[in-house]
Length: 358
Image (cartoon, rainbow, N blue to C red; front, side, top):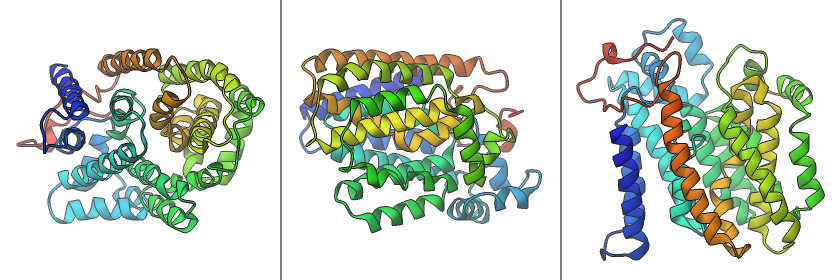
């Protein structure tokens, strides 16, 4: 636990130094994410799926060829390359760089409150912590999130090219194709938002059927061939956040703020997917993450919308801290393995040092 406390304190201090530019010539915002990258890249047996990837790269997993063939092309090549060069950690270093760098670039360019966006990314369990486990999909999510610049610039071909690239890491990235058409084409109608919010609680069977028919990748979750926790506690928080955002939506009507409308619609569409498919375990969270990730930019954008932003900001910081430590506590109670603790680095570690994963 101590290493995570130090980790969070150092992030806070670097963000503080970056905000006030205390040391000239040093970009502490960049250093913050470089530190996060190092923390992720050198980890050993941190993240629930770490063991599976480790054995896959080492080649000592059952049905190796079948396991490799079900992985998207670039993820498979990265696994094979890590095996061929005899450096298992290479997979985790490259994936960490891709995820952290692309989130940093997008947050730095578009967030109206860099520090708050960073804390949301680090502390909310569905973002940074999730990236330590669902590695292949998070590489795809990071690419889509980075593609927001092409959505804003209305460059459909570069965006679609990035989505295609993302599918080479995880096939589910095709779900992000419709995101392009949300920006600038929809005004946040309060009735539509309310409909999306309520629909999520009553559309499980319908959406589950559609996903099972349309996506072979997600059918394995819907049909129960892959099980896992759906993140019920954090889902309840996002549902509560969606509920309390409704009065803001009802009081603010701004057709010209395309970013505000885009972030809100992405949030509620992602929440719809997550809520609808939550009974299928991981399917809801994984499907909704391509949309929910824009929450990182949505909450800071309220700075331009509400007079009580300072109160909202401080409240979100407190919630971030609560979720950070609650996630560590829940992980420590996992019936199979603790995905987060103890934090270890890969130096001088061997396969026998891995915790059992089943």
